[in-house]
Length: 165
Image (cartoon, rainbow, N blue to C red; front, side):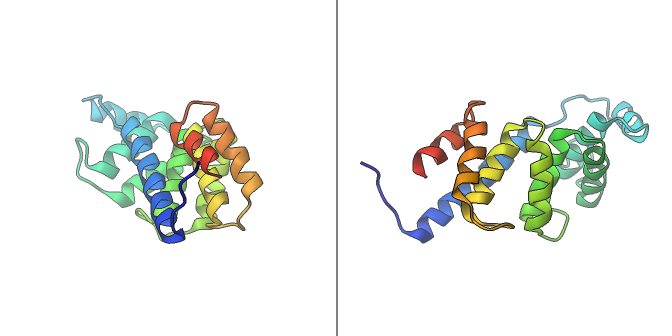
């Protein structure tokens, strides 16, 4: 038997799950290479993965001063090259307003690009967006589709969300 909770509590739970997903995405991208100068050179040369890693370091202040404007600029450069993790992270930036004005429509666009490449956390995020109607009309069949794709990649939050729909 499913337990039911109020809409307000369900909304808070969804927001918490959404935030935790993106914290996990950010944590998995944390830069561990102490050679930031080499990473900077690669990023300046147009290496999408280096731009992404340096953006994550700038976002957190990991080995460099925290600089959200630089993080966003680097993430945009990486995402413009079609690097799926950067596309997903840019979706997060727009979804929560980290270093940019919140824009759920722009968040949706970047999540779609990333999920189209099989990024499981972007797939989960699309499920969340479609289940809540943030930036797009609420669409439970689409939410189930994206939650299902993420769940098939063992994203536990997506499996939980599917069970709750």
